[in-house]
Length: 394
Image 1 (tube, helix red, strand yellow):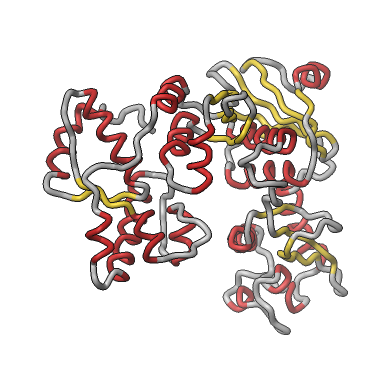
Image 2 (cartoon, helix red, strand yellow):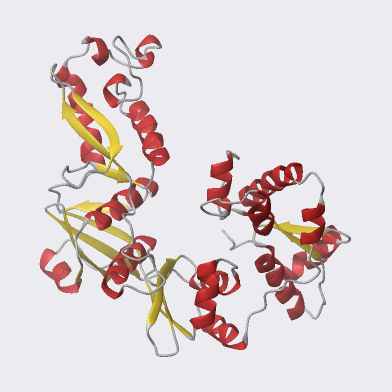
């Protein structure tokens, strides 16, 4: 995305002009401001502006929120956000949040008291040295204390950026990490899916001090199916139940509902038989001719169930033998996730032109990993979000 973007020195003059006599407002302003100052310093220019942090303001004006990250905070406040994690989308979300904060600060005292001419937080020399040595790549990272013990494990699509956030953030956990962190090691994965799977296994194996103790299940809701008295396959979103085998799982109810609305449209399913439209008669989609009438027994169970089974097959790898092929650690490599009879067996890396469908060769390069409900959720949710990821049935 940045391949054809202008270099910093090409836009530096414009940045100076548009920020002249202005206060820079940002979510975690000290991070953004420090990046700007660092880039201007490389050009030999002393960039200095006042800043205002919407994280600090939110903590004072909207206390007791479970999270003050931009995504979770805007979601909790009902602020619509589009194009998340892109410059324009995040900037507009910050604008909407800032307007809400301004309206809440009736006396304007907090706004005045929070304007800073310099960021208080500065990286110490140890943290600077650590960050300078880290690459901006996808992978798993390990934060160590002075004895070499792992105190935190994480994954990121940009390890350098993520560690930078740990070392500049003001959260309680970040402050503890900053106090104890003496070194950071990492493992490149290329693929975000590989990073997610490795992170999950490494946390379970090492149980680091500052990863959530006995990390709670990363999915809360699941999709289940049952056959009703008329022979139709019904779908139901419910809280996860360890005694039931789900078709697929979700991180939260909102994600589950969004998925259901999409598949009802894609597979022309009945809203009533998917739990989206409780009724004793026909569903709403039947009224507008988008449902074939399974809700009032007009469509045969055989015809309707065929489409439901297609949906289930698409979103579940139960009893399947398959390989998921994703990005590797460099341009000539691919990562492979190996699933046998619906069980995640492990992952590995192969050359771009390697014949990965040769099972004997594939099994020799795969690193065995644990199969559990977390790995199933990670794989299924990743495939839902990344439609272009290649899967090969074997």
